[in-house]
Length: 317
Ligand code: SER
Image (cartoon, rainbow, N blue to C red; front, side, top):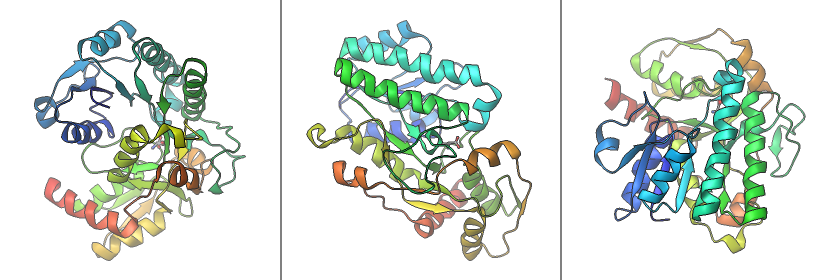
């Protein structure tokens, strides 16, 4: 990995991943790819090259790959689960037609490709506790359909053409730089913003609904480590279960209240998000990632909560 294109560099993951890779490889071209209306600003804009990189525009992507001699593409363009239910055709177009563009360019220009999968690639028939690496994947959401297709297509390009595709199934990601948009797990980010601002939080997910979650620094480490892993050790590729914590809204509320006494939360359950959440695993088994590329998270709920509150106090107050 030397010259890297991050597609979706201004999103929740991209804004932090691009900066991490720029710090890691200061001599490389680390290109912040964006779409119109979501241009990079501030440090992201000033610390390296950026370019309009619409996944649905193959010739635009090819031009960037050639200009910057790109060897690795992080494809982070996606509509999250709740938005994808409102715009299923657009979600398919971005997530699958867009991926096809990228994989073809990767095949012709010898690029490695990371396209994240998700807990959303599982469905109601999947074992919910200790969800195995290789198991039933019959999601009912459009987001999930695109993620299963992403895994299959990425593996297809590896087996058929030798394209170096690798990826992980991200849990819900909790972060304090860029807000997620339209996901089922977003509540676990928004709750911290409300708590730090001293506001009551209205929770769209019902008590007792457990989902896999992860703090962004661990997610970024996974995204980098999987692409740097020794390929001879990889039995799997697309995609690895990775996990660090699992909680329901009540556990999260109680943890935040330990640090912000008096924090209040009430429920107004959103039926679309709730149905999606109930079809996702409670906790994935990530032993294959641990065995094949030494995956190990650093943050638990307490460590994340301390760090989130500290970072958001600096940002918001
Ligand atoms: N965080 C995503 C969502 O909620 C799942 O990968 O849609």
